[in-house]
Amino acid sequence: MTSNVSPGRSWLSRLLRRPPAPAPYRPDPQPLAPFEQALEEGLLIARHGVTLAVRNRLIVRALRENEAFDDTVAARIVDEELRRAAEEQRANAHGAESLKAVAGRSAGIADHAHDYHRVDTGTLERRHLLYAALADSLESSRHDDAFVAAVAEQARTDAWNDIGDNVVSRLRTRMSSVADEPDYELNRPERLRQLLEEDLASLLPGVGRESGDPSGG
Image (cartoon, rainbow, N blue to C red):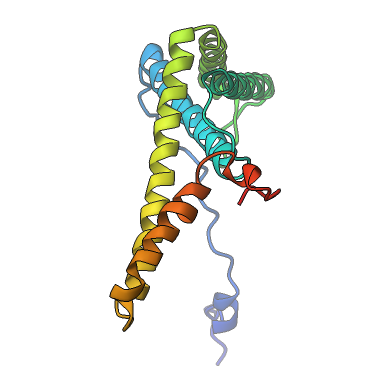
């Protein structure tokens, strides 16, 4: 006798069944910080980045180029890094403005975090204005002698601390490697002489050049 009931789906068809489509990307709206607060926080981050860049350049000048710290040169480096940071923020502002123009022609709901639509134009406009304000502030800081001097001094302090930490680490490594030698006490005066006349002296700008070593080492 033939049954009128349709047979169930086979195990193979169930295995190959397509999973349900994921739900559209719909992030929960997040409250935005006041514009002035966002600008202040952005400037703090930008200043930290500029100080870090200046510090790195001062370390290179001191250790690789045997150049002593100079206020005028440090101020010039700060100015260059501020200009570079301002240009980056200008580019970010231009990018946000371009995204807003594209989003304004697109309806619907975002599929992912960087899929902008008409509903996002307000956020993108705020982002554009914030980046532009950051660029203006960084550009203005280039003409603030007190600000430039403060960044240069902070960078110099950070650079010196990093160099000092490196010297201490080297000394600890060297001392731990020779402390157990049988002739430790006998060779101690010679090691102290090397420390004073060679190791520490090599960190002074210009020592390598004065001794005729073109590498400055």
